[in-house]
Image 1: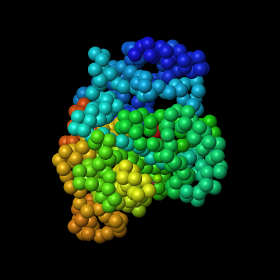
Image 2: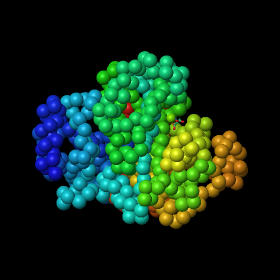
Image 3: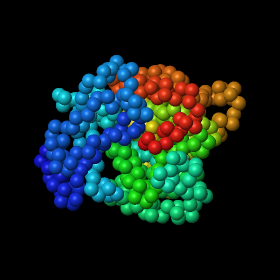
Image 4: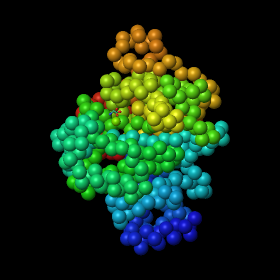
Length: 450
Ligand code: GLU
Ligand code: MG
C-alpha cells in the first residue's frame, strides 16, 4: 500500500502536482477535504490524516451540534485514509490531485460515522444475497457570473430550455467541462441546458455504487473548478430561488443477479425485480429524508415541477418519484432502470445509495409487490382520489421528515445507530436554524454550500 502510494506520489510530483485533496462528504452532502502535500501521500496512506470526529455533527451552516449522545463533547479524532485506487490528478486544477477518503478509528477499524463504509457495508450485504446495484447520478445546477450573490439577478444563460443557443455564452465553460471530465476519468452520458433558471444538466455513467458516489463528488470538484476558470460560479443547491425549478440529482439504478438486470421488462419490471421497486416505494418518505434532506429540499419536492411530490410510481412518468424506464427493442432489455427523483445535492451520495440499496433489497427478499403504475399526475387529483389510490404527499416540513425517518427500521439499520443518531441530530440543527426564517433567506443560505 505505502509502496504503491510512494510510486503514485512520485509520478504526480514529477508531473507538477503539489498536493492531494483527501475528500469526503458530510451528513449535509457538503464536500469536505484535507490537502496533504504530495510528499506526504505515502504517510497518509500508511497512517491516515487526523481530523475531528465532529464532522459527523456539522450542520449545513458549519455549526456543530452536540445533541447526538455519541458525539456530545469536543473530544475525539478520526483518521482519513486515501482510497488510492481512485487517486486522480485534477485536470482543471493541475497542481492538485484528488482522492476519496475513508474515515477510520485509532485502532484501524472503520469509523461508525464513515458514510463511505456504510455504503460499502450495504453493497457487501447485497452481494451476499446475490444482488448487485448499478447507479448513476444526473446533476442539475445553475450558472451565474463569478461573484454573484444569487442566480436570479444575473442568470448565466437566458434559455431557451434545451436550446443549443442557450449554451453559446457558456462555450468555454462547456468545452472545459467536457475536457476535464474526460481528464478526470468521468464519463458523461449527456449535457444540456435544462429548463430551470440558468440551469444545466449532465448525467454520469452508471457504475457500482461506491464508485458512483465517488464520481459524484469528483464531478462537483470538476464543475466548480471549470466554472471558476471561466469567470463563473455554479449552484448545486436544491433550490436557487423560491419559485424557480430546483436542482434535482436524480439517481438511476438497476439491480442485477448473476449479471442479469432484474428490472428488465416493458410495462413493468419482471416479477422478481418488482420487489425492488416495491421496497423503494414502501420506504420512500424515510428514504427521501436521506436523499433530499435539507430544508430547501422539502420545498423542491412540489407538484408540477417534475421533481416529485407524491408516493407512487409510473412508467416514464416525469412526475413520479420512482420513474420506471423500461428496456426497449432499440436499447435492449438491459437498459431498464428505475429513476429516483427526490434526490439532490444535500444528500450525502454514499448514504443516498446505502439507503436506496437497503430499501430495495428488503423489497426483493420479502418479495413485495408494487401497486399498479400511475400514468397521470396525482398532483392534479382531489385528495379523496389520492387517498383511494394510496398516494400520499411526501413530507413537507422538517417535523414530518423527522417522523418519516424515525419510522423505517430498514433506513436506520442501513446507517447504523451512531451514524443514524448523528444524521438525525444534524437535521434537527438545520431545522432549528431555519425555523421562522422566510424561504428566501433559507434558500440564499444554501445556495453556495454544495
Ligand atoms: N428540475 C427538476 C427537479 O428538481 C427535474 C426536471 C427534469 O429533469 O425533468 O428534480
Ligand atoms: Mg433534468
